[in-house]
Image (cartoon, rainbow, N blue to C red):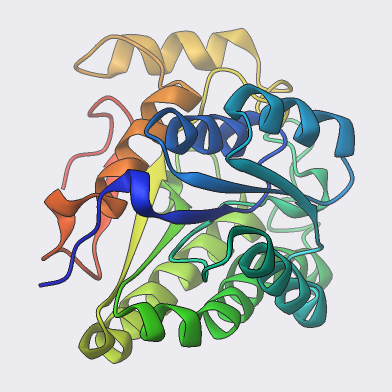
Length: 257
């Protein structure tokens, strides 16, 4: 089975200007990979992440919901690095989504537009990313696609209806793509974190919620962006060469499967 050291991969991380995406980009950069730091609006933050990584990083703007913008970004990355993107982490969280249990859409107030927004940010983005990168991966006879999910799919302790449904659909997408793309040497997996302490998206979550999580997990801690980022590296590494279609939950053991 094909594998490739992290230091020889060209990695595209969407939504990499802040939070979990920034931690993932930095983690790959730490291991010597060439990294595309994708951003939508936060140009300054993306440039700062790229500066942390050094001359192996390239900040590129694209709305992950825009198929043409994704294709342009993937092409620009290949031109810059002189080789195709081999590894994709689909992380971007669209629409400045916030994990606020008091202000979330409820069963009574949720709209189909809420669901559509999350499906577009998860499944639509993942589809266009795979379609834009597939030929390059096939030419390299190596590809890694890693989607960022959520443990709320397994345990919706707070019912973020639209967000969790989008991530559940993304897991189905991951497993179908794993089945089809495996013969081309492309693996497709998911990493699902819990509530992460602390990102822009989780800043609205009350401290009492973090305290409850901390006391409920076997490790008695709350997952950090760096915890999830390091687990993401596994799926791109040679050690995961025979792993595809899987969902790795990284939440300190809060959800066990």
